[in-house]
Amino acid sequence: MSEVCSIPLQGQVQGGDDIEFLEAEVSTKYDIPFAVVRYSVSGQKQKTGLRLDLDKQVFIDHVEGNGEKQQTMNRAAREIVKVLGVVLRPSPGNVYTRTQ
Amino acid sequence: MPIFYRGAGPGSYWDINDARQIGFRAQAPQLVATMERLMNHIAQTTVTSPFVSLTRSYAIAHGYAMAGPGGIAVQDQPGYVYEIEIADPLPLGLSLLDPIRELAAVLPGPLDRVSYQHDGGAKVLLGMVLPKEYQHMLVSTYPQPGGMSGAPVRVTQELVTLVRALRDAEILAVGNIPASCVLARTPIY
Image (cartoon, rainbow over the protein chains, first blue to last red):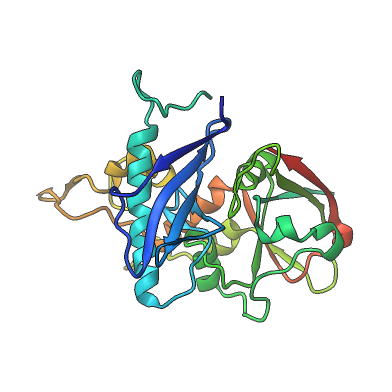
């Protein structure tokens, strides 16, 4: 079984300022309060992801840009946490439910 | 001597750079270590900071090491947990701060008009500690004098900082941590 679970964000989390949020990766091996968010800028998928602290609901890594871009990131962080909270909530039929 | 830990996720600065060779330094060592910056560093994860975060908990460092800009740590792409031993007296130019003690010393007193305490119910802390599961505890309405309040719970930056610092068993270093203090760098996945 894969130790990493990828959860699609497109269509669920609104981007902005040329940023689009593609998917979030979480560990299925350990219950950690972090996800790695893959994103694109102007349609180009970025090589590195952004660490998201799921408890603080803020990105640990930052994208260069103005205040508006930062506002987009702050809003998206909260939205992504909500999406992951729903998807990862343990339930019998939930395919994303963690194994540990 | 006390042991501290720091996690470095795949692709992070301290994954790419080995602190056993160069030690640890803050991203913005030129900044003055003020209480405002301490709170922003812990509560908002502000990058432009004169602090280096350490933890007394291996498990916390392990969690941080499991996620980096390169992705989730796996066998082909591990994260690292650093083990750091700092002797007393501290190396020249280095100081260690317990954020709880630092912040508690400047919190408003019980008779001050402005309080750092929340004004919600008994489960507000759950909402702060586990927002994924208990976010609603921060937006619920709670009884207030004269009836139910429709206002969101008051959660101050000071309280958020206290909770976050406790979550991470966090200790802050100000100044450079010499390479000689960095005992080990263990791959984890």
